[in-house]
Amino acid sequence: MKRALARRHGLTRLYTLWLAALFIAIELVTVVSALVFVFLPISQRAADDLAGLMVLSAQTWVELPPETRPVFEDELLHSYQMALRPDMASAPDTSLRHGWYLYFLERAFERRLGKEVFFQTELTQDGSEWLWLAVPTGGRSMGVGFARSRMQANPFGALTVALLVGTLLVPLLAWWLASRIAKPVARLELAAAHLARGASPALLPETGPRELADLARHFNHMALQVRELSDARTTLFAGISHDLRTPLTRMRLALELLSLKPDARLLQRLEHDIDEMNQLIGQLLDIARGLKIEAAQVLDLGGWLRARAEVQQAAADAAHAKLVVQCPGALQVLAPPGMLARVIDNLLGNALRYAPGPIELVGQALPSPLLAEPAGVRIGVLDRGPGIPPDQLDAVLRPFHRLEESRSQATGGFGLGLAIVQQLAHANGWVFRLEGREGGGLAAWLELPSATSRLI
Image 1 (cartoon, one colour):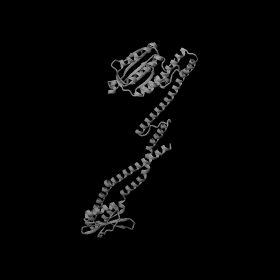
Image 2: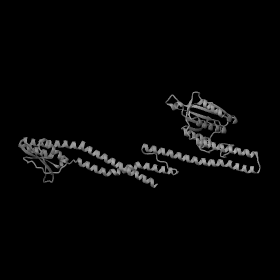
Image 3: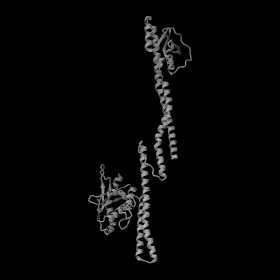
């Protein structure tokens, strides 16, 4: 668990660094873009407008009659926070440190007046600061000034504050986001470590983004399969040890009796026990072979089912059962013939053992709601025996599970036939299910693709 936590912290730290670097880079690009494409052009245009207003105000004052000039000066002061001062000498370079806006304003005056000009500052009696500039007009040098409070807007300062605050907040935001990303991965790593040690991990929550939810769902499915395989292995070993111990005990007893006195019946019992053990081993090998891949072939289902019925005819005669095949002549299926034969033979063997009487071997097309061709086919083994209780339909698919618990070969098999069918169906992607029949009996259905549906 410590290793998992260390890896989680390492992943969180790595994501934090990546996200922080990404956020800072995006913020820098945004700030530079805003400066270059928004604030600098707006500042230059505003400086040009103010320079034009100041020059126009000086020219208008010179051209106005002397008696109207005070009214004009009052209007400039109250409406534009500007003032005029006649016969003001041009200021030398005062080395005034100012921001970008005043720099743009000086360049605007330089373009309009054709010479370099400089601002000078002045403090009024009320403590406010004014900026003055000499504008030559009408043969005079007019001083035009405006209050520094006119420049209250400071976009460059706002950008600087935003950049600093963003730089401080980015690591926290990146850490929070990285933790949310790394937490499901760390949970998955911890669950995978439990699974690797053979433990049964808790199922992961299938929430969050689609990819993480799908990953959790696939892991949960895998964990459940591993759990089922482990349970099946335990059941399989327990069943083997149980079902082999009985004939071995009888064989040991028979050998001890034979050492005292030869007896033909004891020899016959030995042969029967050997056959019983051979059958058990053969069925276990069938389960093992169920995972091996066999090439699929296109089979004429009707003819193939009739051939399987002929193979089972001798067993049907011995059980006093009647096999009937019902299948359309044009129906074809794509399946590995060996695996399909083991499935059908196991189902027929179960039906002949537990439900002797009329047994139907059925082949049907599964219609598709969108296509004219069938979506697949299903093969059924239908009998009129005692059936299986509804609450046992899933349980009988587990190895060594029998409805009759005596384990006697006289009343049933080893409980592996349906487990073999389920294993083979799962390995080939088929659907196998059991269901009761109306009027009594059991229907075992196997659904698999038709030859035409696979080609589509």
